[in-house]
Figure 1: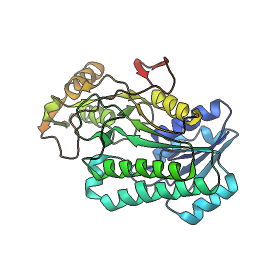
Figure 2 (figure 1 turned 180 degrees about the vertical axis):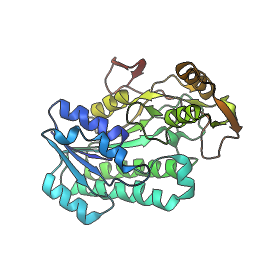
Figure 3 (figure 1 turned 90 degrees about the vertical axis):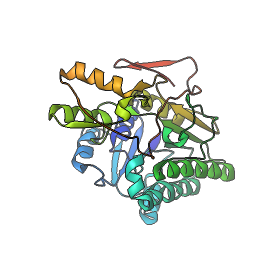
Figure 4 (figure 1 turned 60 degrees about the horizontal axis):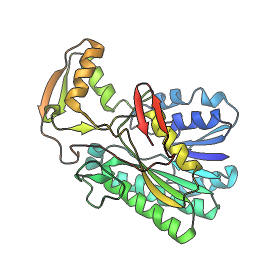
Length: 303
């Protein structure tokens, strides 16, 4: 099988490509190496994959219709894992137009090209942020029409468009909502890296509400990748799935664990929770792989 993985040099995308290559699939990695964080980190992510047969790197932007038309005509991907996006609720508040351009119009471009070229399946990466302030546990049947940030709103819009294309053209489509992913190759703006770096440099950590009453559902990257691959392999016509650990951890408790691991005391700068941030991210989802539990590095995750 030949897969197009957008954002394929990023955190989750590079892990997904590695797993697909390991089972003998072909991977077309699409990435524009933007400066949201250092492009050199992304190039390190894919250094090993570049040496393997079946791997093709395309440096480009999925907003570019002409370039994407050429990619589809040349490489003819059979299935698409659309992971590429502008990420993060808080940065999106400052740059809403960019988030709309990438996450909405860029997604429509790919959906339309997948339709034109008769792709066998499309998996869209979404986010637990679409649940906003809905009470936890967050299940897929909850309303998601009150997002708290442009980021969440654009991902919700992409979900709706994915369904519309499925409805009109019967392209098998699955949406997977990620819950606070962590692990090797994580982005430098992600909480584990930010907190540990601050502790090592003896700098204060900004902790909203002092970390009390603020929860995140930490999910190990291999668990997420297992769920994405299950969605890619599925014969489900259309559906939405939460991919999460289902065991939310209070941020203050997370800090305490980091203090034990590093043997350093965190310096806490408590501030009010930003309007764009939900207080919790606790998911409960239906199974893509019934009665199967994935476990890596101490994280157990029901997909």
